[in-house]
Amino acid sequence: MNSPNWMVLLTNTQGTIVHALGDHALAPRRLRLPLGCGRSLLESEIGSNAPVIAGQEAQAVLLCGEDHYLDELRTFSCAAAPVPGIDGSVAAVLDVTGVDIQADARTLARVRRAAHSIEGRLYEQHTDGLLLRLHEDARFLGTPEQGLLLVREDGRLLAANAMARHMLDVSITLAPHALPALDTLFDGSSLAGLWRYASGSEISALPLQTHGGALLYATVQRGRPASAVVLPVRPKVIPEPKAPAAPAAQADPAWLSAFGRAGRVYPHGLAVLIQGETGTGKEWFARALHDIHRPSKPFVAVNCAALAESMAEAELFGHTEGAFTGSRRGGAAGRLEQADGGTLFLDEIGDMPAHLQTRLLRVLQERSVLRIGADRERPLDLLVLSASHRDLADLVAAGQFRQDLYYRLNGLTVQLPALRDRQDLDALIDQCLGDAAGKMPAALRARLHDYHWPGNLRQLAQALRVAALLAAPDGAIAQEMLPADLFAEPVAPAVAMQVPDDLQAVQHRAATAAFAAHGRNLSAAARALGVSRTTFYKYLRTTR
Image (cartoon, rainbow, N blue to C red; front, side, top):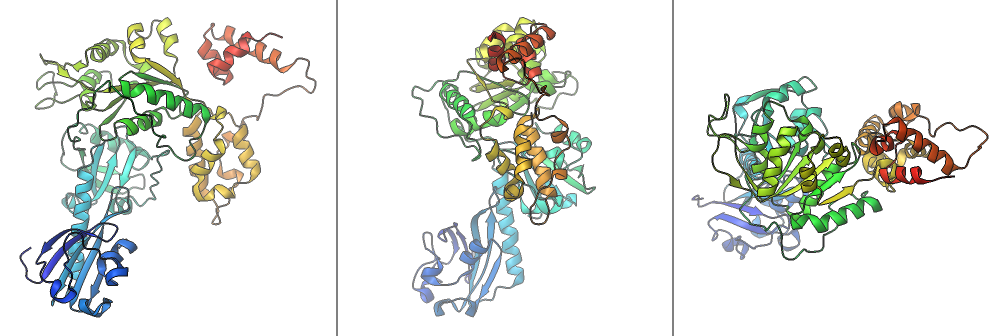
């Protein structure tokens, strides 16, 4: 900065200057202390000043002349604006200080725009997922006025800046256990066109229709790759796993036991197979493992049940230019290559088409991938997690899943508990309800404990999110604010007034009948009774 009367300062959240541009000799003449890197601007040291106020108030501030506390600063004129971080908190403060010159509203506006530009760079440098730029007018995309969304590979929203929240006109809650899906904000048909370009670089603006009827324009860009840091697939020393980066409610002993065992095996490069009913949080479990052991590396989730038959091979393994009609110019990396250095999460692996199972097995054995149309394999360094709500052993026995791939994927198998079996249901309820937790009557809470929860955590979070939004002004929750399904299901199976048999006999007869009715399929019979395989097997073996 060449102006003899201006300085540009960047401070951290503690009020310390971390970068300065301009004539550092301006300040010592009046303040007797340099305004260079390392200088503290705390109010306790130099009184009121714009950078500290902007950081504390989280809004742009203009402070001129006598607004300052110290007499030495009376000729200073300061315009400061907070730089929002990806998590929405203040990451830093940008300040422009003039000496013997007056800052005005236009100066403040420029500083505010510059702060938003820095925010945009923070989003652009994020290494995980996709970056969406939004605006009502496509000409403003790429400017400080744009909305910014960070989206995970599975379509879950990771972050949204203030501009995006304003444009979407919604209150976006980014709780780790209940990240909203992008299709809850935008019409699904308009999203389809956007995702077609998600594996490439930035594209021209595409229209997106919100559920509220607003028309926005968007571009999508894949996050920058993380800096190259080589991590061995099989490290010689395994550090003790840290406590999972889980919500406070994650305190169920069975869940914690599964997470602890997986955390000891996963860093060795051994595959972990996560089993559990639909909605038990298998992807969340996988991402929590990744965030602890390879936090700066990519996490790529592939829903094997949602792979389009015609494009599944190219999507997974990538292709070269000209490999097939419609192939991308210059070729494209597949999802496996995108996971290089990080974690590949294969969700609903039991639904992967048979011809892809063969190719996947070779990739996992050789730790290399051959793009469609290529003649040279590319080496891969990745850790593999897979998940299924179906029992893979049963699928192998039925000839629907390759046995050799099954043994490759289940280095360790962990079973996530169903919601009805968890011991931390109260904490999960409170976490989903937030501020309204204390306003739920005891009778309704008891009903939530008695309910079967076939949709598990996903169903619980959805039901309580709706209840919290419908709550009365004082936060009170009534029965009509909860789904009718919760009250249509009997609390317990009807039992005659007289009980001719003991409980174990009833359980044994029910298990035997379910086993026969489902063709001696243990998993199917257990699901029909709503119990785990272990519990079902215990019922089956019990005799009167």
